[in-house]
Length: 265
Image (cartoon, rainbow, N blue to C red; front, top):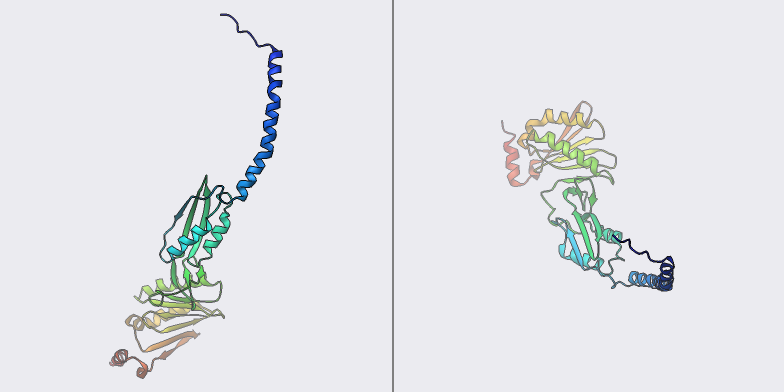
């Protein structure tokens, strides 16, 4: 086997010298042109437009038509210039939107995940509360006028009120009694109302568990039978309680008859 002839070193060096000026010129051109091109792309909203937007989420209460228009408006323009944080913040400004994530997918796609608020009860006069304890105020409470528990309390107390509500529901469920609302006052005094137009129960600021236990032990028959004569039970007494009765004359005709019959032996 014949050995391959080696290219003379001088010829190789000459070839490099011949191409070096061209390479240096190309590098110089790229050094000038590349920043100009990148600057043009970054300043021109039509250079790399967003062409695909994916939205994922389950929507029960949001205005999906208005939401779609908002997303289309927010994502119009350059893929590179899109501020995903601004898009997220704008969407989360909707009271019905709990959480949003926005990400870019090269080269022209935006993917948005939206989690809608899921209310569990009314809160104070004009808001709703989610299971997480987050309070939000939608533009309208249409559809939430009846059939929803009504909770209330000072700002920041929603998680605490939700916990009390759950505790009371569990304890009263043993008697087959429902609960319509739980409230915490500014002075941190508790009261709640039984379902079906039942009495208001005033517990007060202290000894919550002990007082509720006294209520259940003493009034279980009346609560179970739905005694409509009782308007209010005040448990704030150390060794007893106060009961306010409804005047039969002020009851509706059907309930008035039931109240009178319930007094018969």
